[in-house]
Length: 319
Image (cartoon, rainbow, N blue to C red; front, top):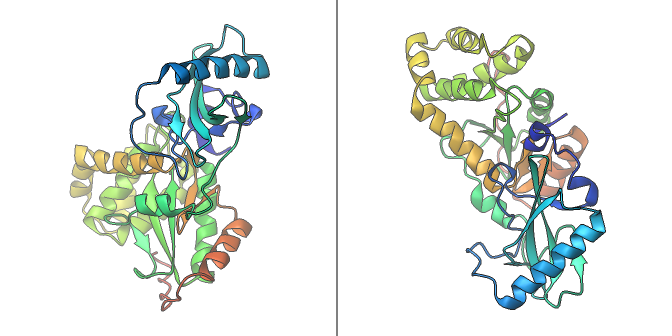
């Protein structure tokens, strides 16, 4: 299965089975901000809004049979894409485990709505594109590519290894596409993923093109890497890639490298990434990255962009 915090804490179906939109930032347990919603802190609830929240909580408990053992935290009420509805963040806790989601309630309190709401007058992926940036990140493909794939990945995730193999096909079939790699290790269930991400970054710092060699070696050897041997494996991969082993180990132990990986992770959280792999194709999210859907997105995106000069494929010894 794909990695995600909900799997780590065990609340796999608490909100998913009742149709709530997932939290934009599950790791931080904060509320989502769908397209059209305000990003500023909500003001204190008015007496009318507080009454609406109490009425809505009673309705939600009745609808889903959530008795007193379920702790519900609703609000604060936030603007939504519709002026007639509030966006309502929801956190549910039972048996010490929590899950988060969102729903909508009309301002007159008469309508409860689950799912996602969009402002049809706006580009639904513009906010995503504004948050994505490639500066300082490993990438392949032309810098002025018409289509850019941002890949949020975890080196210990089995589905990420499958995507790694898929993207090799994409590179060969779509020479005008740029791929930008972002780290999203899910340490709660993948204990050596963060260390591997730090090691790959250290390869990039020392020699940018070596990142892809180390990247490939990690995925190719995923089955034999463990928490106990990950450091030694990374040093061996670095040496195999022609890097200075001493400098690599110094970087591997540095707080700066860990901070870089954490910054990638935070960027993913801001984009609602909660599982790996998650892709953004010119801002359009794709969880899992199956080949047919990825090809569909690339084909569609290319029809509304300007073509660029295709890149030259690297040799078989490097990426």
